[in-house]
Image (cartoon, rainbow, N blue to C red; front, side):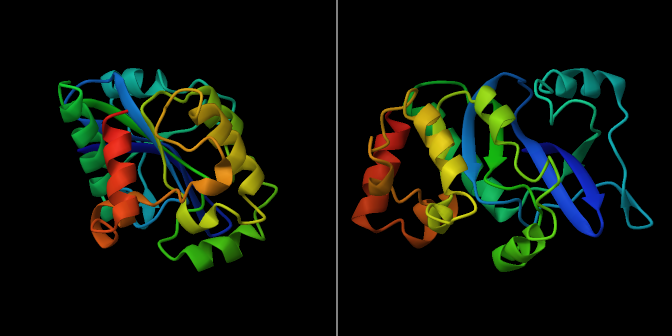
Length: 217
């Protein structure tokens, strides 16, 4: 898996958005996952503590084709490391592709309810209080305009958070038009994070049901 994303650091706060997980060599979108916020994945190329953007012309041609959105275009692209969550996202989509007899390759889009990069969710939420004027804090409209099924919603315990519930419901309303595994009533969905779905809660009946419903959707 290769990981590409937009990234900036403003006033000590890191933002990562429009994240693409590439399986194989295909640039066709094979699915979308929406979660909480960017976590431990870091820029791969760094010099003196500063991330170095991608400058390969051929690679940028592919990446810039994904810049359809006001908060996407005009920003540099960076290559990122693969963290545990991304590994589970990849596995979930691989299982979906296998279940549908499709080749395991393509781009998995990763969107988040907010774009502050911090492995500690509580710290990310604290940082959010000082960055709410940044347009890239939440890129909900652009993300929704670029949704491609299958779509997995995995923001877990942020589902009723006062800062995010309105945007979460916007994602939900669009997603349920294109997938069947979601309960039509927002409050009846646990929105399990992929890591909980596939690891910590994998033996729970609710997780088994959601996993099966998603990959066979």
